[in-house]
Length: 306
DNA sequence: CGCTTTTGACCGGCGC
DNA sequence: GCGCCGGTCAAAAGCG
Image (cartoon, rainbow, N blue to C red):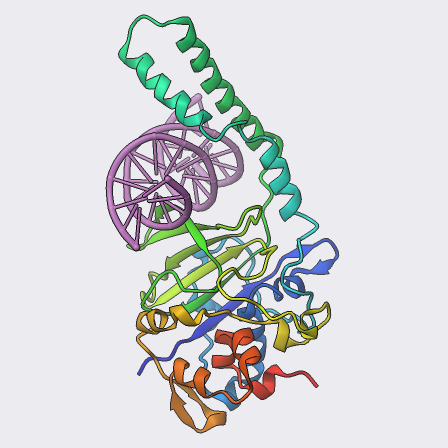
C-alpha cells in the first residue's frame, strides 16, 4: 500500500516586509499541510517528511527552508500587489497588437527564404518581424526578469502532473541535466494569472514528483466552486483558506492516477479511500468542497480553528 | 473549432 | 567572447 505523501515544503521568499511564507499559504494548501504535519507527524503517523538533504540541491536555485508561517492568511483571490499584477500588465502592453502578427510574420519570412527577389510588402513584413523580435528583446532586457516568489514540494505519486484544482497549460518541456526525467513547465490558464509551475521527477527517487510553484493565483480555483461563507474573509481560519480543491467529477480519474491509495487516517481508526471519506464525511458539503485534498490528510478537527 | 501538448528555436544569465 | 544551461516562445500537431 502506497501512501500519498507530501514530503517536503520549502519556501523562503520575502515580499516587501512580510514573510512570503505567510502570503503564499493562502494559495498553496501544502504549505499549511506541512506546517501541521511537521509538528504533528509523530502523532498522526500518516505523513513522512523527508529531510532537506533528500532533495538534490541542483533541483532548486532558491533557498530551502521549512516554512514557519502562521495560519491566519488572506483569502485566495487576492492579487499580489508587489509583482504579479504589475508584471502581467506591463507584459500585456508589450504584446503585439494582434495575436496573429507573429504567425503572419514567420510565414512571410519563410517565403523570403524561398524567394530570392523580395517584394516591398515582404520587406515590410520582414521589418515587422524584426521589430517584434526587438520589442520582445527590449521587453526582456528592460525589465530584468523579476522572479516571482517560489516554493516547491515533493509528492510521491505515479503521475507527474498532480491535480491541484487549477487549470494549467503546458508551455515547455526540457531535459534536465543529470536526470533521465524531463522537466515540464506549466502556466495557469486563467487570464491575467501569472502563476507558473515546474514539474519534474526526482532523479534520486523516481517515485517522487517535485512541483515548484512560482507566483500566486489571483483567482479562485476554476475547477470547483468555492463557497463564499464568512470563513473566506481576510484573517480567516485554516478551514476556509487552505484547500486543495478536487472536483468530484475528476475524482475517479484522480484516484486512478494515485493508484486509489487508501489513506490511513488514525483519527478515524480505519483506512478508507478518498472517495469514501468524502461521501461519508458528516461535516457537510461545504466542508467537502472546501478542503479538497487537505481534508484527506489533515483531520477535520485540526482544520477548524477555535 | 477551440484548446492543449509537443518540440525545436531562441534568448538571457552565468561561468570560464 | 564563447559555450552551457534554464526558461520561454510559438508553430504545428493532436484531441475532444
